[in-house]
Image (tube, rainbow, N blue to C red; front, side, top):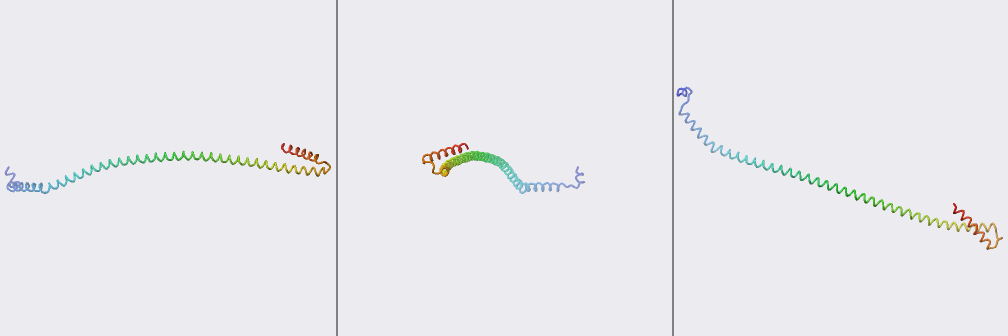
Length: 171
């Protein structure tokens, strides 16, 4: 075996020195380089884990906020539908009241107009009767003249007036 090692060109002294150098280098690297790097990596890993936890919490809060927003919007929609429904009901009721008031007012105006028309007609008939009476009296007086006495004259005027009035009522 020693020939094999010698044929490969390995020297024991140099090999042991290299192993010692490697052990020293490994210790120095582990102590001064790998240790701080591992601490940095562990802190970074802890920060990443905290960020993940925070992200999950924020995601849950975001979901809760979205759910609450949906509930608020649903409540607002229902409230607006209720208000609109009430407004329609009030509008329908007011429309009915306004129509009823307008109908009553129209009936009152029509009744007032009919009463006024009846009053005017009665007045016109009275004036007409008076005028017809005067015309009959004048006609009888001109037709008969002064041949009749006063009493007979009035009787004739009344009879003529009665005939005209009965003819007028039958119309």
